[in-house]
Amino acid sequence: MNPVIALVGRPNVGKSTLFNRLTRTRDALVADLPGLTRDRKYGEGRVGGIPYLLIDTGGISGDEQGIDALMAGQSLLAIQEADAVLFLVDARAGMTAADEMIAQHLRQQGKQAWVLVNKTDGLDADTYSAEFYALGLGEPVAIAAAHGRGVTQMIQNVLLDL
Ligand code: GDP
Ligand code: MG
Image (cartoon, rainbow, N blue to C red; front, side, top):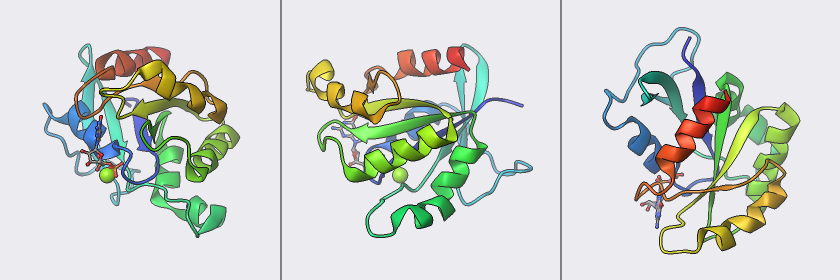
């Protein structure tokens, strides 16, 4: 089976923008896959001719619901299904409590995860990425999903590491 990669992060960080960029030259929606739940959006991406399955999710807000509600959410199920997780954060918003909660969950799961610092267009990528190192998931990767900055390099590295 092709590798499965999930996009997670709180609402509005750019998950769907990245999903569309990575799947847009494909017939994006993969309708019926046995064993996969259909309340999430699945699409096919390709790196160097190798296909992978990408999962978009609605987003983990982490606001008033607490960790129990998070554990039941579709994003958490997507994380379970995935071989690797792309965890998006927002360079302009900076670190939030919800980001820390998601990071803690990913660390507990021991899931292979990359922190993608999105919306770095027009910003100094290193400066804005640095604080997210504290999430404890390795070196943050600066991207701009809406403009394509860093996206091709990022997905190549992710697939190579699987
Ligand atoms: P989602 O809720 O995580 O799926 O986020 P969306 O993909 O819907 O994007 C939320 C907002 O962020 C939209 O207005 C996007 O246009 C904007 N956005 C996404 N990626 C970027 C980016 O790389 N740079 C900037 N400046 N805005 C972005
Ligand atoms: Mg979305």
